[in-house]
Each structure stands twice: as structure tokens, then as C-alpha cells.
Length: 106
Image (cartoon, rainbow, N blue to C red; front, side, top):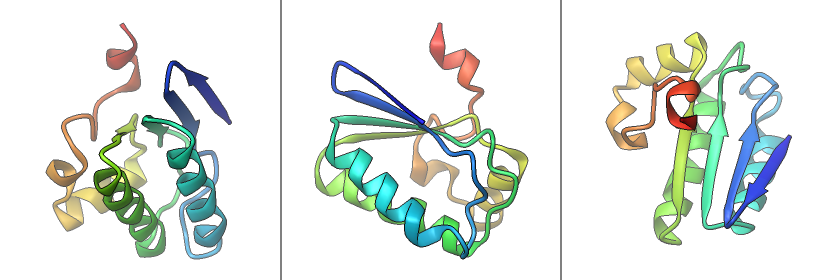
């Protein structure tokens, strides 16, 4: 699901971010990034995440930086938080990583 407003698009990832979904999610996220200046990805519904899903997020982050676009990872599920903690990447993904989405909507 995607919602757009003034150059900003919000995607809610509702499937697990695993090897089984990685190719489709990669295309979906890269297309969304191309279509906007700011991309918010809501990760609250991700029940499982493996290194393939993690690599997709790394790719999207790298591409956003190359294109000088804003990427925010919002409302991480426990599965996402665990993997980000394991790889110590919260700082890489920015200050929004790990914040509750309700806190950013105010």
C-alpha cells in the first residue's frame, strides 16, 4: 500500500522480508523511490526478516543517498529491530530508524 503527498510516498511493508519475497520487494521499493523525493517505509507489519530482506533495505538506502532523496524507516517490528541490532545499523538508516510511527505523525 502506498500513499503520496507533496513528493513524499509512504509504503507499508505487509509481507515478511525474506529471501522468498526479496526480488519483488526490491522492485517495489526501487520503483517507489524513483517516484518521489521522500520515501517513508513502515516496517511495523514485518513478521520475519532475514539477510535478503536486510540487503534490500541496504540497497534502497544506498540508492536514496545516490539520488539525494530522503528515506525513513518507520515503526520497525521486533524482527526488524533484532536484525538491525545484530548488524548495528540503526545509525546508518538514520534517526528515524526504530521510532514509533505515531511519534512522527504529530
